[in-house]
Every structure is written in structure tokens, then in C-alpha cells.
Length: 477
Ligand SMILES: Cc1cc2nc3c(=O)[nH]c(=O)nc-3n(C[C@H](O)[C@H](O)[C@H](O)COP(=O)(O)OP(=O)(O)OC[C@H]3O[C@@H](n4cnc5c(N)ncnc54)[C@H](O)[C@@H]3O)c2cc1C
Image (cartoon, rainbow, N blue to C red):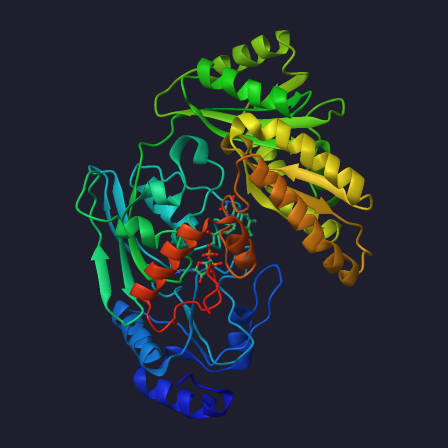
């Protein structure tokens, strides 16, 4: 029988008896940050918040939850956008925070691999790799706070996907605790291992619905020795896509970041973020921020400058600036990385993390922008993001005094129109942020019946009592 709120006190007593002291946060103020997501879209309650220090404690917690039919909500850095790390309002779920599992277990520079615990922040993993003379390419604006366990659970993307792939592509092995407390361990630095189903790949991107990731073995690369970064104005999205093709050819595939920004995004950053300046003299409708990098000492600035010159002659580039030093490079990236924060400060917004095949990006942006102009006249379109991966944060910003109720009333109509256009362009309604709680209905609508059935069967097989992150990713009746 499923527990009810009348059982809460007895359950808490039993939970206290099942874990060593110090694992449970009892104080309401200490628990509070774990009960809401960072966008404040969701506010939950919990039976408790547990911060295990050892794998054995994670295992004991899950075994207890499974026996008592208590829902478990794994939480990393709590920076994700879809409410996946927030408990529901029942007060009967257990939040398990991974922050204390934060050891770098091993670095093998010769093997280009690192084994880390789930609660390490992404920045900590990047630093450990750098100290060993290696490079870990996952890069997100939230690197200082998000945890590698959360990155893998969401199959995070970010700024270097074009060249290095998403989190799944960077993962060699996983250690995870399953719903019944068993530990799946495959922390091997093998690049080739064709022995049955890809269970590591399955756990990556499962958003805490199949188990708790406690550690991972990740791929490393040699340190980057040269980079070249440019900010270029382009006449339109089609030119931005054509410029990417030119740059890839000129740089022999060494483009690691290719970000698209509309003028509206630049203006938000200029208005709301201190220290941001317009890199170019005149205003333009669209910009790209691109970066080449190499593991060797190379004159990449020359390669980039020549490619931009050729592109200017072809009418693909209207103006451009190359970062002359690390300070200028940092300031170009500061501009890009502060767009979400600038948008938050400007007022409320409707956000869509979508992707389409790169060759269809211009067609999608044209159609979706026209729809927004026709149907949301009070909104400002801020469609920016990882265009090199065909991924745009297709956001609509509203004035600060917009009433939440007015926004909420528009949201379903806008979401449906944008996501239907994404589907019509062969794309995905969730490029890199996952499903969480926010997009469960979207997955129901856009995934094929066969894929939904397969996902449900996998879920039932690994979590027959449905305790792992209930209400996230899949609607289970
Ligand atoms: C400024 C900013 C920039 C961002 N930029 C990007 C970007 O470019 N690309 C991108 O993809 N995302 C981006 N994000 C979103 C976010 O940082 C990522 O989704 C990140 O991977 C989440 O990690 P986290 O540790 O915060 O996870 P959380 O938010 O804590 O959890 C996310 C999900 O994973 C589950 N989970 C967490 N840890 C574990 C674990 N150990 N085992 C099993 N399940 C777990 C949770 O239950 C939840 O469902 C950005 C966020 C911010 C605030």
C-alpha cells in the first residue's frame, strides 16, 4: 500500500533508524533550498532531505525507500531547467542530495580518463583534469554549481558539443545505485566494449528515474594549446549556417563553439549586465560567437581571420572582431553567458529549448519568428544558443510588469505552436535540458507510441515500485 500523509511521522522515525546520524537534514531552513528549483517554477515538500557520504548510505536509503514505497528525488547542483530535482507537494518524497560524494577517485593521464564521484561540481572535474595536464570539454554556464552526476543524469550539452559531443559521448563508465539498493558498477576506461546492451548509455540522460548515479569514468583530451575567438555580425540565420560550413572547412573541424545571438539578446545583456559592451561599432540583426581550438601550438587567429575575410567577400559576414588576448576572449564569452541572467533581470519569459537539423535552422527561425510576431505582439523574441548543434533557446521576453496570470494563459498556446513547428522541421522539443516535470506532457505528445512503450517497459523492469523520481520524464498511470 502506498504511504499517506498520516504515515509521515512514523516513516520519518523509521528512516532515522535506518541511516547513520548526520545523513538527514532535519532543520526546515536547511531543507528549504532543496525544495524548490532555481527558476522557482516548482515548490515541493519532502519527508526529508538526505545527504549521504558513502555509496553504502545511498544503497541503504534506496533499499529503505523501495521497501516503504517512498518516492526518491535525486538532486545534484539543482541548476536544471525542467523541475526534475524538486519533490512534489505531498511531503512524502525523500530528496537525496549527492554533494557529499565529491571525491576525485582517480585520474589516469596516460589513459586519458578520470573517475569522479557524482557530487563533484563540473568546475571541480575540469580543474582536476587541468591539474593533470588534461582537458575535460563539458562546458556550461552553471559549471561552478552543477554536479557531474546531474550533468550525466540530464545528458547535458553546453558550449563544446559541436566538437566533443554531449555528456553521454564523454562517458566511459558509470556507477549507480538501483531502486532496490543494488549497485551497478562499470567504471572502466574502455573505449571499445561491445558486450550487450549499453546500460551506461541508458543511465546517462535518465534524469534520476532509473537509479542514482554515484560515480563515473569520463574521457579526457590533451590540453588545448591554441584558441581563436571571434564575434561576427551576419545578415541572417542562413548566413550564420553557411559561415559555419566555411569555418569547418577552413579550420579542419576545429570549431568547438558556434553560438548564435540576435540583437535582442545583445541589448538585454548591455542593459542588465554590468561591464558588458557591444563588441562592434554598429548595430546588426544577428551575431555569431565562434571559437576554434587546437591541441597543438598553431596560428589559429590567422586561420579564423582569413576565413572571416573570405566570408565577408561572399556576403556572409558584415563586420567582425577577433579577440586579441585572453581578456577580450573572456569579455566576448561574458556577453554570451550572461544572456540568461540578463533575460531573468529584464522580466518574465517563455522558454523553449529546441533543436532542428542545422540545415533547417533558418527555415525554422523564419517560421517560428513570424508566428511570434503575429500572435505574441507584447513579447520580444530572444532566440539564441548553440546554433552549431542546431540548438536554440527560443525564448520570448516580456516586460517586467507582465502579470504572471497573463503569461500563464498564453504559455500553452505558444508552446504548442513552437513545438509543432519544431516537429514539422524534424526537430526536438528538448535539445539539452531534458524532460523533468515540465515536459512530461510534451514527451507524451511527440514521442512515438513504440518509444514511449519501450521507455515504460524499461522503467518497470528497473524500478517496479515506481520510486525513482516519480512524475518526472514519464507519465505512469
Ligand atoms: C547559467 C546556466 C547555464 C546553463 N547552461 C546549460 C547548457 O549550456 N547546457 C545544458 O545542457 N544545460 C545548461 N544548464 C542547465 C543545468 O546546469 C544542466 O541541466 C545540468 O546538467 C544540471 O546539473 P545539476 O547538478 O544542477 O542537476 P540537478 O538540477 O540537481 O538535477 C537534474 C536532474 O538530474 C537528476 N539527478 C541529479 N543528480 C543525479 C544523480 N547523481 N543521479 C541520478 N539523477 C540525478 C535530478 O533528479 C534531476 O532530474 C544551465 C543552467 C544554468 C543555471
